[in-house]
Length: 170
Image 1: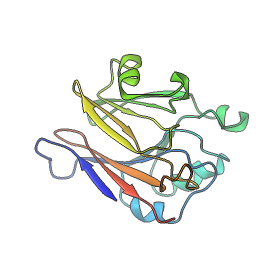
Image 2: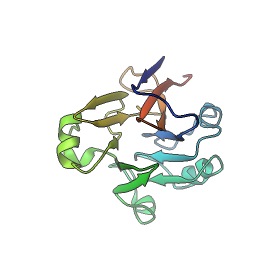
Image 3: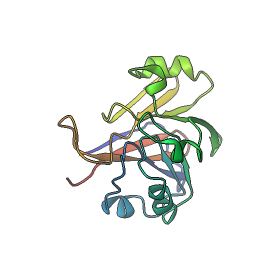
Image 4: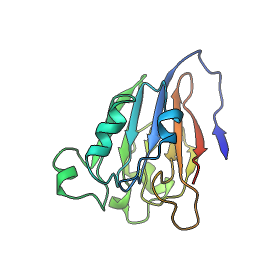
């Protein structure tokens, strides 16, 4: 599955960001290929052992937040929510468990300053643009659960943020 949401004219290049969540300690080799050439990686929590972030750093700089299943070793190293400015866009990264069952509407209300919100927790890939805010869940990149294939996403920040969801091999 490759699904793309965008609109507006793409600037040549732009900032490409790999989005990943819910690895739960499993980093599929395919991620290295899919994320080749990204400028940054955002991990939206439920990482597993902190060494997984070191492996991702071999691809590009990583910003990560902890999720509800991450232990103290991970929580001591990273925060529960990150607010970033990337290519002029306000990006908020969180796992989503803070909202119980996160929905795009609830996330937009919780992060009114964001142009882009990246979250995980549900294991369900999602991209929705409403009220000028792009909300993205790259899905779960770890073990396939709930009958949902593993996935990641590529966020391109150019004239308008676009996202491509990429299903991984099981």
